[in-house]
Length: 287
Length: 93
Image 1 (tube, rainbow over the protein chains, first blue to last red):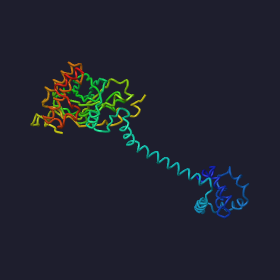
Image 2: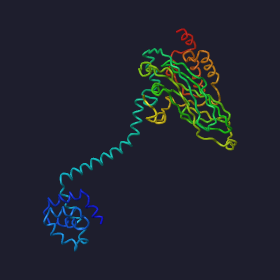
Image 3: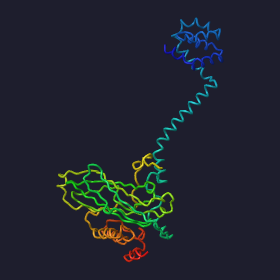
Image 4: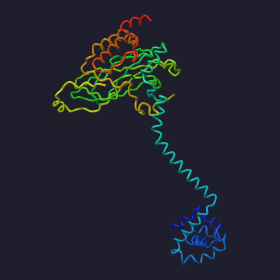
């Protein structure tokens, strides 16, 4: 009975109509024989009016339906090899659409690295851009003798993640600096808990579009920093604002930059573990 | 006009690490006096970095001496021509 459902489709009927029109072989009669048999009641009258030999083939139907159903299918399939123009067109369309689907999926996978390179190149969304090293930039500007006039106020902001028992503040509220001058700033962090806590920080510069010109020469971010209980430490940031900041028309109204750091907790050690530590002085890191 | 949030904004990309890397922490407070000098200068000069650059230079030199920073010529870091006397000259400018 599933066959009957299939033959109710308009497409199948048009295919078979084409078959009947183009083919002269008795194999066609097998198809039509199947078609008239069964539940294709709606189309039956239409088909009978078209071809004479359909009527002759209908006598076969009752005897040989189940036995020859497979061969009918094969022959019908063979008939499809002589494709009509609309069929080839549809198949081409199918290939094209499948290719589009695969193309789209491939694009979504490629989008991640593409987006990253795009943002690195344009500094979109506050990415701190890097084309040449800061030393090269400083050397270039000192050679060309660029004089910068505009004073930019860099304010500092410090945040700590929830549940992290550190007191993290900027040691100075702001620094007034001219583009092209490397400047130093400090943050103070204090471990207020009774266990050594390791934290890692990340930063951001606002306004976002100015992030392109903010170069950090050295800082304390992205590396785990461990503070003993009660330890207070000063964390320096050595930065440099590109002199090209002054010549960029997009930066016209910007005289305030905010450098914001956030500390996240990496791990907190149990106080029982530290009892076994013999040295109380942390090993100095050398770069 | 550019909504940073739409493109993943702050979260979207990993921020670029600093040029010369990470400052090792001064756990032993070896350069504290230089740091204090610099911060006091900032406070007194209205947070103008220009006038206190010589002190930041001494702080970085202290760090280099105590192995807390990679040794490098100060002029490469933008301190060319910055000496103790320069602070007075810059004030006059």
